[in-house]
Length: 397
Ligand SMILES: *Cc1c(COP(=O)(O)O)cnc(C)c1O
Image 1 (tube, rainbow, N blue to C red):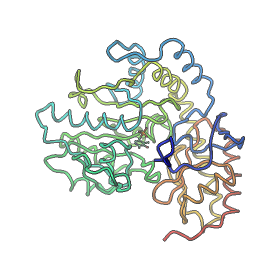
Image 2: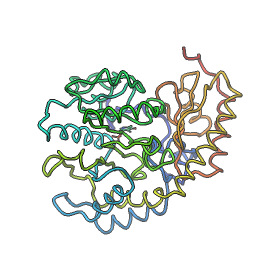
Image 3: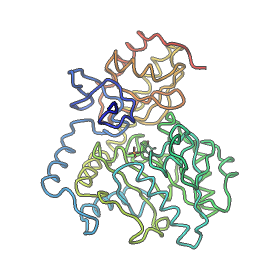
């Protein structure tokens, strides 16, 4: 037998973390890494946050799981908090980002179906998007590398260029249910939607009674310096998927919706065995305790600006390696002139600095939101050393 016990679907690197301490990871062999990847924007409170640990420990000892057959005081409390903090009137809890997007897709279809318009099931989505790895969420993305071997896809998605409002308009038809979009593409390379684009989609939805769905699985939960990124666009979606940072490392997600958008999601239409269980709710509450206040959010914006300024200043010394920095808050993308993957590996293996590569030749810099100036200094030292010692193979064409 040559298959590994862990199904070999991940191209894993040699780092094997066994412990986390604030913004550092310690591997099996004792090596200490500066973690500016945060489990891909998940560990927003770092790795050993006492408030989060305490909340999970207390809840684990009290009540870990009950079925959604029973009333949920824990779920009601966290849902009310999210409703108070966002555009939404109602929340469905999930265990992952893909499930939150799945629920968003079902909510949009059910919205039209509830009005007798079952033929309005098609969502317009955007190229280079990432919405997850379930059948529906890979079908929602145009990325063929995720489709290969898994055909046929789920019907009902149409792909248009990101930030192309005219293209989105032209793709609309009698089957259109709405738009599904990441306000800031994460895997796609930290690419911001423009104000005009999202505001234009909002106007099209208002005019044609369509659903505007935001996938804030990566950019949400304080990552960009507001609790959710949509707040920076002067509009609200009808439906939104959130996950990654929301549990601070505990697996959870949520689909948020307005009362109107959720009109089809009545008793018996959707469910999840684990979704919203008391342990997840305790983690979600602890994360909101820390991040959902003006002081924390403005601190994320300030740290994001300092980090971005430092990187911008530094990359001028390496015009052959770097093009620039983009993104918001602590969701930054370092645009490269060379393949980002080998540079990410070089930073990791030779300078003990963890980042994540993304599409469009970008390195994602997505640290825990609790970094302080010492971590920014350490990041700059490691990045500088990595750039100085790097011999790229060939520039990207
Ligand atoms: C990570 C991600 C998902 C999928 O989340 P999982 O928890 O891996 O299922 C969906 N959308 C976006 C934008 C993401 O970044």
